[in-house]
Length: 172
Image (tube, rainbow, N blue to C red; front, side):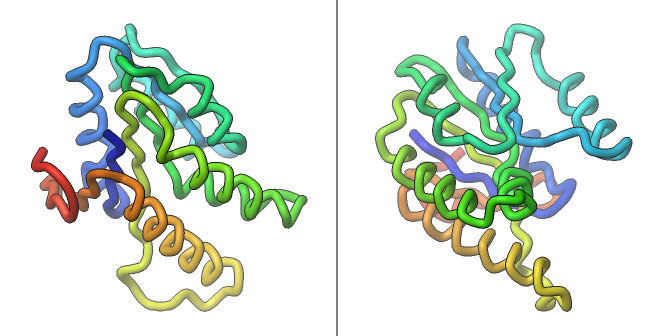
């Protein structure tokens, strides 16, 4: 089962994903964040403290499809947190073709992944259209990515105020 969990900042989406992952004996947390500043370093530390020590952790800011193929397994849960940080990493890279290659690789890999995969991502398309070109591209690409993943994931949930609303698939 592949599940896409969307929500705003501090909505409870990661906590929901961690709760769902906790039902599995074998969990790999696939982190996409890079500690590029003190604030992000603190966010990463917060997530590390919340995770059970028995969970594996793989840090992969770019080659997400390769990491998923390497770590997804029939009896394992892989929790990806988060897609929008991954998207930021790709859009900020010096190689403009990297985004298209990695996005295509991810969308190609997802339908065949074994086991349980939980994707966490920020829903950023609920506000006004951003003023800057890069910000507009980020919002557009995040929306397109969410739509494409929503098609191939068996379950999609939206989280607000810590409360999940299932948009597609079985109840939580």
